[in-house]
Image (cartoon, rainbow, N blue to C red; front, side):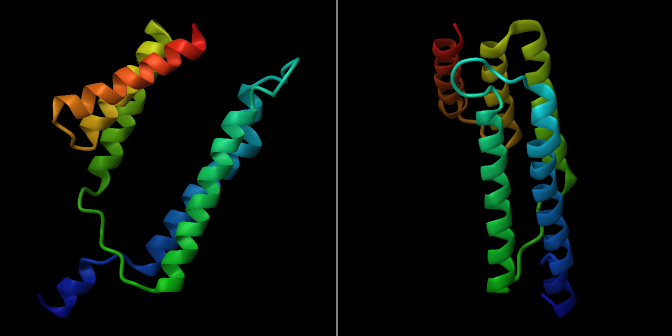
Length: 145
């Protein structure tokens, strides 16, 4: 492998910075604007926005920590082998889950999302596709029945 091919196989520091800023910005946008706009203040107990805000904050903090660690270590990061294909497949999985939510409710949507995401990530072994989907759907059925 020549020096040009070796550097082409690794991501630039600028692309890593852009990735971290875009993802952390999306989490911040969800925390500050999207989640409050889509939830209402509850009566007794925790606010309905508590768990989504907690998840958005945790994701944002993990993204920021990952970005900082990548820059501190200064180790070359490999390019994504799939390119935009993986992003497209995960987007389609999310859309399928949204359609299932619209027409079937929360429990079928969870099952569809789990199955579609596992398939999008390349898992083809039936137990590894179906068992997490059934477990998650059962958990959501118990919570939301």
